[in-house]
Length: 115
View 1 (tube, rainbow, N blue to C red):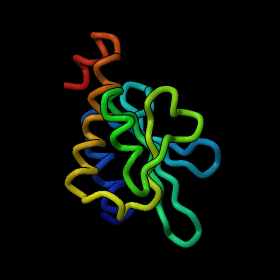
View 2: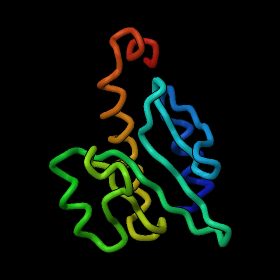
View 3: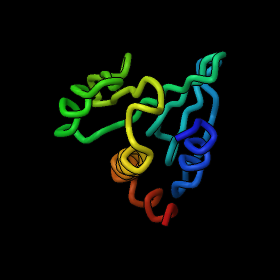
View 4: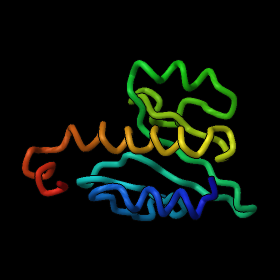
């Protein structure tokens, strides 16, 4: 998956918004809460961090190219170093799930507005 395709996919999730934080990171939120963070270096290599289910955290971090996300690992976030470590279909499923996990914790009125 290319960084451009990843950006289009994240932006298309229901209620997703994008903002730049910390000067360089593209943060994708739902209801004002982060569910994914994309960073592209000057060479065009992209890293993406996202929320995962607690029971998937250890499984995913045992895979090549996937590590606990800096500063967010205790909240069960992982970081994918380069987009080629996971097939595009699997990455999309994981990102959609990250969106669902965060959206499920939003207040009822906000969740209803997303639908």
